[in-house]
Length: 404
Ligand code: DP6
Image 1: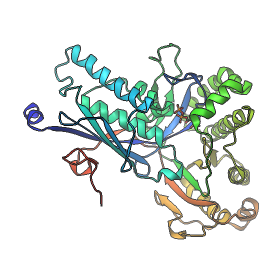
Image 2: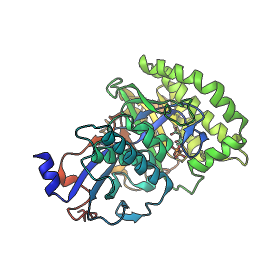
Image 3: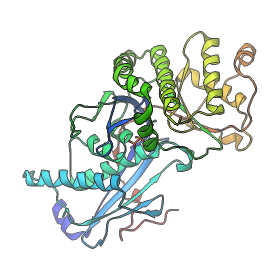
Image 4: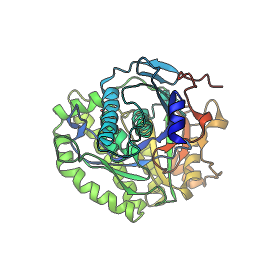
């Protein structure tokens, strides 16, 4: 029945979703720019797609005359080299599978053009790493479309380094690998998303971002000029990775939180050590860092851990029993000026009354409006196929649907 339908239907279509991930041991620096091979291994937590996800639909048909791609409804250039690399690699794997004689392999004609539509359920302007989820989603959807299985993180890596970690759920390591061809530079799950049920993530989306140096250019400049980055990659990260894996295995928040903050700080130190220096942290980031340390000092242990990537948003790791209190601390420190009712989004947050001594010790010089909103989420699974045809982003004509 399946193949009969495939023959009758001019259009084959698949939709997938993929998650965002946040590194706790950072990737910064490539040893091969074309293959996107890193100078050090990294480790991340995959965030739940109920709060943050990319959705991508891919279709192929003999009627299509060109490969086309729509991003949030706008058509974009498909000649982007990283996009081409991903597409080429999936098609190569499909061809290999077909030529290898797999029975169900490549039911589709690989020379047909494809149409791809992709969108995020969060504003791209929020500055949340969307390229990782985007490339993970693209590679997943193409793999499903062409019936390719197996090691796909290697393909996602060709889109964006951090994207390879979004190919798996839970706690994920990207192994730097040794081979010049990158075949061993892949993502591996360290623990599934169910491993640490109390772990929570708060994304503090900040206001007034300005243009900054992108990751790709920034890390290249760091590789070229920072002696600290070289030391970090050779000496510090290998030690930290082993330690971080142990903290995760043992669900040791004290160890996990400390190391997460230290590794974020060292990444930003390598940015300052880059010449000319790169600054991703700003006054508000430093304010949030100081706040987290005062909060932990007040409690006498690590209750919250911050991490910052190549942008101004802060990501806070904490445990479920601390969320309500810390959210209240953030609300008092950065009183919302508009949309006070939408200040907290995502998973529900209980209410907490802050004890006087906590307020006095932790909340200093409030900065109204500096944090736009807080997104509450938790670890989640890897890419998913969407079975519901009504969720396709492309219509039966292979063009983006007008969505209500
Ligand atoms: C600071 O994966 O965006 O977020 O490989 O050039 O596409 P390219 O870079 P990208 O870099 C992410 C850097 C980071 C740290 C991390 O996610 O590990």
